[in-house]
Image (cartoon, rainbow, N blue to C red):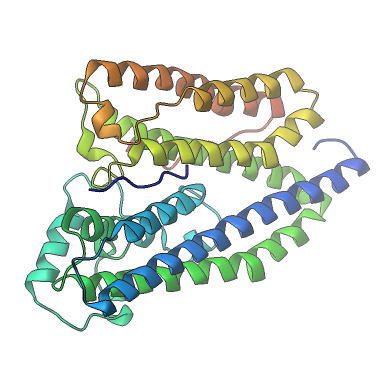
Length: 334
């Protein structure tokens, strides 16, 4: 595989104004993230469509691989989101079928290709299992197999379907969910619920991100093929992108709450943990490679220490400081 460029309130009247600004910030963030994801999925679909129409399979596919990586990085901020159109439309698994402990994606893609269907389209793909609709299926076709005469029709249909779904999400955030949340935020009785939801969302996304590390890290020994993007050897890079997105969400949605509650020391401590985690992140984009030797394991273990510190701060200290209760996490116990 050719080298890919890595892109890498609880007071009276004043709290209402602060809370509205907080909601506006979160709305703006989610709208930007969903629009960026939509743009990247369409760029990926366009590059696959153009390549397959050219019918010259000897040409380099590096730009397609790069577009896939760009799309995955754009998906990272939306991973694990529990409220909004992704959940409402039940599209999370269609965007990314992970964890995939038994390589269901691999087996089902093999079955589809053995059927020798030559005219795949978005309608046919939409009727298939979620295991073959999303970014994991495209990763297999683009990186493991590379695009060819046998799989181009399938890859094109998957990419186009992905683009359609991302457009639904982007439109819904802008036209429905953001305006609705802003209206709710103007009701002082709902302010505490909104604050609690923002913190709960942060906690849930953190658990999801941690799971992406814990699954391949394993208990007794590493399980590199449990990583979310082992075929493209980009799992560690994507994990960093996830923590970067989590930091942005913290800054926009949770840090202002801590400051309002005079919890500046805790806020600064969390910022320090994010800085330590991200500034010392291993340069190697493949988690599978890092888990294969002692040097890589040492680097990963150092990252895990910061991950554990961050988890304690965000899931234990923040709720106490803000006097809220974060409910059961859907990713716990998986």
